[in-house]
Image (cartoon, rainbow, N blue to C red):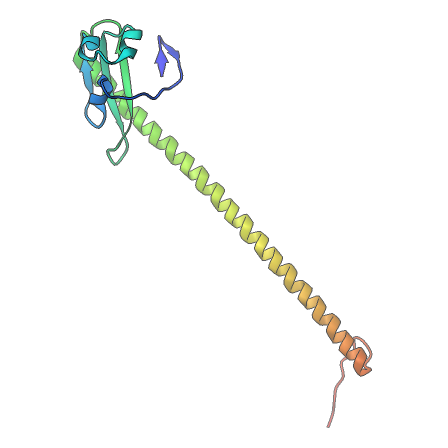
Length: 162
């Protein structure tokens, strides 16, 4: 959001009774003058001294409206067709950028989830390797104890011949 050519915080507000309600899920809407009189319940228009309005839906690839791009004017719009074209172009670009940003965020999240799964599986495998190694060591110890109990020297292999 920009106000008077300077960045401002984005905002959310109830669209009922505003020109934005006409834009949601529809085409570009240009109201070249008297917008306050047409939407008397929209206090923001009064507070900002808005005379004219141009808005377009931001649609994703599936055609779902994911936001709005709006330009508010303090003077009547003289070239409605030009403003409509400009708002359409910027809305398409903004929608594509929002979708790209969302896809990048989803990719980052998927990569983080995958890394966590790999880390978890690696930890589990390491635990199993340690367990197996411990069992192998214990088996060797038991075999040595058995040889000792049988009176065999440790480390030797006995052979029986018939």
